[in-house]
Image (cartoon, rainbow, N blue to C red; front, side, top):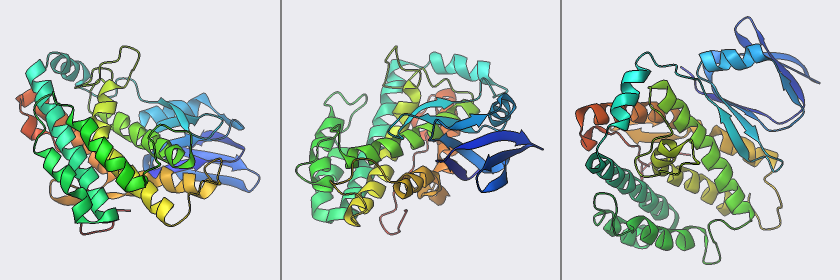
Length: 305
């Protein structure tokens, strides 16, 4: 079972050797089984890699991420139609009703805001999170009251400080963006593996976005990244004096796939939870039942980081 995210930060030559990833750099030659890898993150432009390796990564379901000049992931390569029932799954996906999509989105937001509440409770105490727990109960099918936005207005200033603004050009937002991009790749990888088309979303429907469904389902994982970044900020590993994310911070965020979460009442790594969530979404669409969608939760009683 794949479990490792590989982050390449220095100049290297990558190739395929006897079914394994072979890395050649100034420290010598190194190999790693492809079946152990969930994501390969290429941070520096000074990397050369073979087409045989890229093809093998797709055969093994490895997500290959590229990064921009600030080291933030900006692209992902995913397998093309790897699922044996891809056509059938695609047909049932695009035929889902508006009612089913609305109820699925309701479940996603309930899970997301509950996870935000747990994240905030762990950071600031139960009293600070009470408003979020109350908002969860108000979410209706399709979220016509935009409870998601109401929750965000309560959540961010209490978690990151009154001066924090999501979307600003600062080190905390850079860390959040990095973590979200990594998790987004994991979610997309699982959806493709189970025959889903990431283009067709439950709620997101941007014609210019090839990952609408991915962006829908990764909402429930955002608080896991928020919690990680909050801890880095609390430990003063993220400071306003920093202009870019340090190499150790990027390595830490690249390892988000091994964070532990709860799904079906059991502990699983985040990457395993992505698989379970994708498989359950297929079941929910087939059965026309939102209750079949399995969504991850943060465990308030244990350290998931």
